Image (cartoon, rainbow, N blue to C red):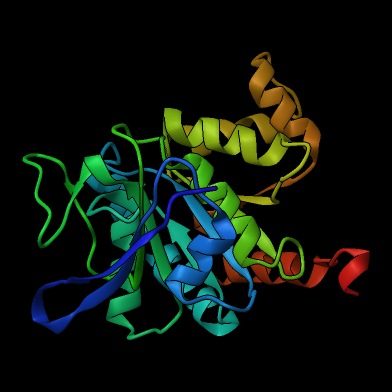
Length: 260
Protein backbone atom coordinates (compact mmCIF):
# COMPACT_ATOMS: atom_id res chain seq x y z
CA UNK A 1 0.00 0.00 0.00
CA UNK A 2 1.35 3.46 -0.87
CA UNK A 3 2.02 5.75 2.07
CA UNK A 4 -0.46 8.54 2.73
CA UNK A 5 -0.01 11.83 0.87
CA UNK A 6 0.47 14.99 2.95
CA UNK A 7 -1.79 17.91 1.96
CA UNK A 8 -1.15 21.53 2.89
CA UNK A 9 -1.34 25.13 1.63
CA UNK A 10 1.68 27.18 0.55
CA UNK A 11 1.20 30.89 1.47
CA UNK A 12 2.97 33.11 -1.05
CA UNK A 13 3.39 36.89 -0.91
CA UNK A 14 0.62 39.37 -1.80
CA UNK A 15 -2.10 37.08 -0.52
CA UNK A 16 -1.50 34.32 -3.06
CA UNK A 17 -1.60 30.67 -2.05
CA UNK A 18 -1.40 27.25 -3.66
CA UNK A 19 -2.63 23.80 -2.70
CA UNK A 20 0.21 21.31 -2.30
CA UNK A 21 0.62 17.58 -1.83
CA UNK A 22 3.80 15.94 -0.58
CA UNK A 23 4.04 12.46 -2.06
CA UNK A 24 6.15 9.50 -0.86
CA UNK A 25 8.32 7.44 -3.19
CA UNK A 26 5.57 4.86 -3.60
CA UNK A 27 2.41 6.59 -4.76
CA UNK A 28 -0.98 6.11 -6.39
CA UNK A 29 -1.57 8.79 -9.07
CA UNK A 30 -5.34 8.53 -8.63
CA UNK A 31 -4.99 9.31 -4.92
CA UNK A 32 -2.64 12.20 -5.75
CA UNK A 33 -5.19 13.67 -8.15
CA UNK A 34 -7.93 13.43 -5.55
CA UNK A 35 -5.69 14.96 -2.90
CA UNK A 36 -5.24 17.93 -5.24
CA UNK A 37 -9.03 18.24 -5.53
CA UNK A 38 -9.54 16.78 -9.01
CA UNK A 39 -12.39 14.29 -8.83
CA UNK A 40 -13.36 14.43 -12.50
CA UNK A 41 -11.12 14.02 -15.57
CA UNK A 42 -10.43 16.92 -17.91
CA UNK A 43 -8.03 17.76 -20.76
CA UNK A 44 -4.42 17.80 -19.56
CA UNK A 45 -1.25 19.27 -21.04
CA UNK A 46 2.23 18.63 -19.70
CA UNK A 47 4.95 21.12 -20.63
CA UNK A 48 8.59 20.06 -20.62
CA UNK A 49 11.64 22.10 -21.49
CA UNK A 50 13.99 24.80 -20.35
CA UNK A 51 14.31 25.83 -16.72
CA UNK A 52 17.43 27.26 -15.09
CA UNK A 53 19.58 26.71 -18.20
CA UNK A 54 17.23 28.66 -20.47
CA UNK A 55 18.88 31.91 -21.59
CA UNK A 56 17.23 35.33 -21.10
CA UNK A 57 17.19 35.70 -24.88
CA UNK A 58 15.28 32.42 -25.32
CA UNK A 59 12.90 33.48 -22.55
CA UNK A 60 12.18 36.78 -24.29
CA UNK A 61 11.54 35.26 -27.72
CA UNK A 62 9.31 32.56 -26.23
CA UNK A 63 7.18 34.63 -23.85
CA UNK A 64 4.59 35.86 -26.37
CA UNK A 65 3.75 32.46 -27.85
CA UNK A 66 3.54 30.91 -24.39
CA UNK A 67 1.26 33.62 -22.99
CA UNK A 68 -0.99 34.21 -26.00
CA UNK A 69 -0.80 30.69 -27.40
CA UNK A 70 -0.42 28.00 -24.74
CA UNK A 71 -1.72 29.86 -21.67
CA UNK A 72 -4.73 31.29 -23.49
CA UNK A 73 -5.53 27.88 -25.00
CA UNK A 74 -5.48 26.25 -21.56
CA UNK A 75 -7.92 28.84 -20.23
CA UNK A 76 -10.26 28.49 -23.23
CA UNK A 77 -10.27 24.69 -22.95
CA UNK A 78 -10.45 24.59 -19.13
CA UNK A 79 -7.41 22.30 -19.31
CA UNK A 80 -5.01 21.30 -16.58
CA UNK A 81 -1.39 22.27 -17.27
CA UNK A 82 1.54 20.49 -15.61
CA UNK A 83 5.13 21.75 -15.51
CA UNK A 84 8.18 21.81 -13.23
CA UNK A 85 6.82 24.56 -10.99
CA UNK A 86 10.04 26.41 -10.14
CA UNK A 87 11.00 30.06 -10.52
CA UNK A 88 12.95 29.35 -13.70
CA UNK A 89 12.45 29.21 -17.45
CA UNK A 90 9.18 27.85 -18.77
CA UNK A 91 7.43 27.57 -15.36
CA UNK A 92 8.00 31.32 -14.94
CA UNK A 93 6.40 32.05 -18.31
CA UNK A 94 3.41 29.83 -17.58
CA UNK A 95 2.92 31.03 -14.00
CA UNK A 96 3.43 34.70 -14.82
CA UNK A 97 1.13 34.45 -17.85
CA UNK A 98 -1.63 32.82 -15.81
CA UNK A 99 -1.34 35.53 -13.15
CA UNK A 100 -0.99 38.40 -15.64
CA UNK A 101 -4.26 37.61 -17.40
CA UNK A 102 -6.01 36.45 -14.21
CA UNK A 103 -6.75 33.05 -15.68
CA UNK A 104 -8.25 30.26 -13.63
CA UNK A 105 -7.05 27.05 -15.30
CA UNK A 106 -5.20 24.73 -12.90
CA UNK A 107 -1.42 25.00 -13.20
CA UNK A 108 0.32 22.18 -11.34
CA UNK A 109 4.03 22.37 -10.62
CA UNK A 110 5.70 19.02 -9.94
CA UNK A 111 9.20 18.96 -8.44
CA UNK A 112 11.37 16.96 -6.00
CA UNK A 113 10.80 18.19 -2.44
CA UNK A 114 14.51 18.21 -1.60
CA UNK A 115 15.33 20.49 -4.55
CA UNK A 116 12.87 23.32 -3.90
CA UNK A 117 12.07 25.97 -1.34
CA UNK A 118 8.89 27.84 -0.49
CA UNK A 119 7.48 29.77 2.51
CA UNK A 120 7.91 27.47 5.49
CA UNK A 121 10.39 25.20 3.73
CA UNK A 122 13.85 26.57 2.93
CA UNK A 123 16.86 24.51 1.91
CA UNK A 124 19.66 26.95 1.11
CA UNK A 125 20.25 27.46 -2.58
CA UNK A 126 17.44 25.18 -3.76
CA UNK A 127 15.02 26.47 -6.40
CA UNK A 128 12.06 28.61 -5.24
CA UNK A 129 8.58 27.66 -6.42
CA UNK A 130 6.73 30.00 -8.79
CA UNK A 131 3.78 31.69 -7.09
CA UNK A 132 1.71 31.85 -10.28
CA UNK A 133 0.88 28.14 -9.90
CA UNK A 134 -2.36 26.97 -8.32
CA UNK A 135 -1.16 23.52 -7.21
CA UNK A 136 2.08 21.69 -6.44
CA UNK A 137 3.06 18.05 -6.15
CA UNK A 138 6.30 17.61 -4.22
CA UNK A 139 7.77 14.21 -4.87
CA UNK A 140 10.41 12.15 -3.11
CA UNK A 141 13.86 12.67 -4.59
CA UNK A 142 16.92 14.88 -4.42
CA UNK A 143 17.58 15.47 -8.12
CA UNK A 144 15.60 17.19 -10.85
CA UNK A 145 14.28 14.41 -13.04
CA UNK A 146 13.10 12.37 -10.05
CA UNK A 147 9.65 13.88 -10.64
CA UNK A 148 9.39 12.70 -14.25
CA UNK A 149 7.40 9.54 -13.51
CA UNK A 150 4.88 11.52 -11.50
CA UNK A 151 4.37 13.97 -14.38
CA UNK A 152 3.74 11.10 -16.80
CA UNK A 153 1.35 9.19 -14.57
CA UNK A 154 -0.54 12.25 -13.32
CA UNK A 155 -1.03 13.57 -16.87
CA UNK A 156 -2.49 10.20 -17.84
CA UNK A 157 -4.64 9.99 -14.71
CA UNK A 158 -6.06 13.52 -14.72
CA UNK A 159 -7.14 13.11 -18.35
CA UNK A 160 -9.19 10.08 -17.29
CA UNK A 161 -6.67 7.64 -18.79
CA UNK A 162 -7.76 8.48 -22.31
CA UNK A 163 -11.24 9.89 -21.79
CA UNK A 164 -9.99 13.42 -22.49
CA UNK A 165 -7.04 14.72 -24.52
CA UNK A 166 -3.60 14.44 -22.93
CA UNK A 167 -0.75 16.01 -24.89
CA UNK A 168 2.76 17.34 -24.36
CA UNK A 169 4.47 20.57 -25.38
CA UNK A 170 8.26 20.84 -25.68
CA UNK A 171 9.81 24.29 -25.30
CA UNK A 172 13.61 24.60 -25.35
CA UNK A 173 14.95 21.94 -23.00
CA UNK A 174 18.08 19.95 -22.24
CA UNK A 175 18.98 16.45 -21.09
CA UNK A 176 16.01 15.92 -18.76
CA UNK A 177 13.52 17.17 -21.37
CA UNK A 178 15.09 14.86 -23.94
CA UNK A 179 14.63 11.82 -21.70
CA UNK A 180 11.06 12.83 -20.85
CA UNK A 181 10.12 13.29 -24.50
CA UNK A 182 11.61 9.93 -25.40
CA UNK A 183 9.75 8.06 -22.65
CA UNK A 184 6.43 9.85 -23.23
CA UNK A 185 6.34 9.42 -27.01
CA UNK A 186 7.71 5.88 -27.32
CA UNK A 187 6.09 4.22 -24.30
CA UNK A 188 4.07 1.07 -24.94
CA UNK A 189 1.51 1.65 -22.18
CA UNK A 190 1.43 5.46 -21.96
CA UNK A 191 2.36 7.72 -24.86
CA UNK A 192 1.23 11.25 -25.65
CA UNK A 193 1.15 13.36 -28.82
CA UNK A 194 3.77 16.11 -28.63
CA UNK A 195 4.00 19.62 -30.06
CA UNK A 196 7.54 20.97 -30.43
CA UNK A 197 7.97 24.75 -30.39
CA UNK A 198 10.69 25.27 -32.97
CA UNK A 199 12.83 28.35 -32.49
CA UNK A 200 12.85 28.14 -28.70
CA UNK A 201 16.37 26.70 -28.62
CA UNK A 202 18.33 23.65 -27.50
CA UNK A 203 16.58 20.26 -27.63
CA UNK A 204 13.37 21.62 -29.14
CA UNK A 205 15.29 22.87 -32.18
CA UNK A 206 17.39 19.70 -32.38
CA UNK A 207 14.26 17.55 -32.49
CA UNK A 208 12.49 19.89 -34.92
CA UNK A 209 15.44 19.73 -37.33
CA UNK A 210 15.45 15.93 -37.13
CA UNK A 211 11.71 15.87 -37.87
CA UNK A 212 12.18 18.07 -40.93
CA UNK A 213 14.99 15.83 -42.18
CA UNK A 214 12.81 12.76 -41.61
CA UNK A 215 15.66 10.75 -40.12
CA UNK A 216 18.55 10.99 -37.67
CA UNK A 217 21.73 9.10 -36.92
CA UNK A 218 20.83 9.53 -33.25
CA UNK A 219 18.94 6.33 -32.38
CA UNK A 220 16.85 7.99 -29.70
CA UNK A 221 15.75 10.81 -32.01
CA UNK A 222 14.95 8.28 -34.74
CA UNK A 223 12.71 6.32 -32.39
CA UNK A 224 10.85 9.52 -31.48
CA UNK A 225 10.41 10.35 -35.18
CA UNK A 226 9.17 6.84 -35.95
CA UNK A 227 6.26 7.12 -33.52
CA UNK A 228 4.52 9.67 -35.72
CA UNK A 229 3.25 11.40 -32.57
CA UNK A 230 5.36 14.55 -32.84
CA UNK A 231 4.47 17.80 -34.64
CA UNK A 232 6.21 21.16 -34.84
CA UNK A 233 5.09 24.77 -34.66
CA UNK A 234 7.58 27.58 -35.23
CA UNK A 235 7.51 30.57 -32.93
CA UNK A 236 7.68 32.62 -36.14
CA UNK A 237 4.19 31.34 -36.98
CA UNK A 238 2.87 33.01 -33.85
CA UNK A 239 0.49 32.26 -31.02
CA UNK A 240 -2.55 31.71 -33.26
CA UNK A 241 -0.77 28.89 -35.09
CA UNK A 242 0.02 27.17 -31.82
CA UNK A 243 -3.58 27.43 -30.62
CA UNK A 244 -4.83 26.03 -33.94
CA UNK A 245 -2.43 23.07 -33.70
CA UNK A 246 -3.45 22.33 -30.14
CA UNK A 247 -7.12 22.65 -31.06
CA UNK A 248 -6.67 20.15 -33.92
CA UNK A 249 -5.01 17.67 -31.56
CA UNK A 250 -7.85 18.02 -29.07
CA UNK A 251 -10.46 17.51 -31.82
CA UNK A 252 -8.60 14.48 -33.16
CA UNK A 253 -8.70 12.83 -29.75
CA UNK A 254 -10.58 9.56 -29.72
CA UNK A 255 -11.48 8.12 -26.32
CA UNK A 256 -11.06 4.39 -25.70
CA UNK A 257 -13.96 2.23 -26.79
CA UNK A 258 -14.85 1.55 -23.15
CA UNK A 259 -15.78 5.21 -22.59
CA UNK A 260 -17.43 6.01 -25.95
